[in-house]
Image (tube, rainbow, N blue to C red; front, top):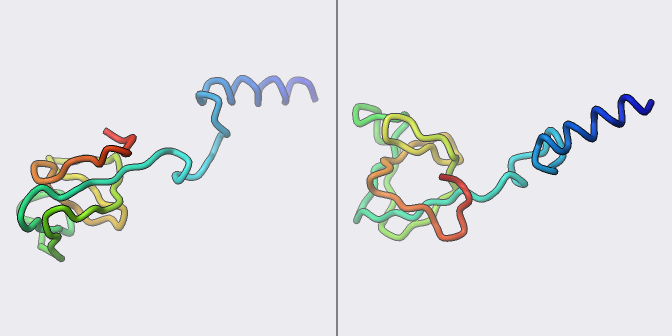
Length: 94
């Protein structure tokens, strides 16, 4: 029994003192603010991907830390160009 507790304790410390397998809501906040007048939201990370909607300047959206090909993934799996968004002041993602 002590061996299991020891392993669990080491895993807890290696994970930065956070529970193993925690959900993403405890992992931090990732939000963007639109800096362009109108921002195209695309179905994938690229200029050739279909536009599925638009967002106005100063709109705030939940995002993911994932960036691909100069595009950031929003929380709903749509993509926006990194060039036209800024992370909010309370964002912990990069």
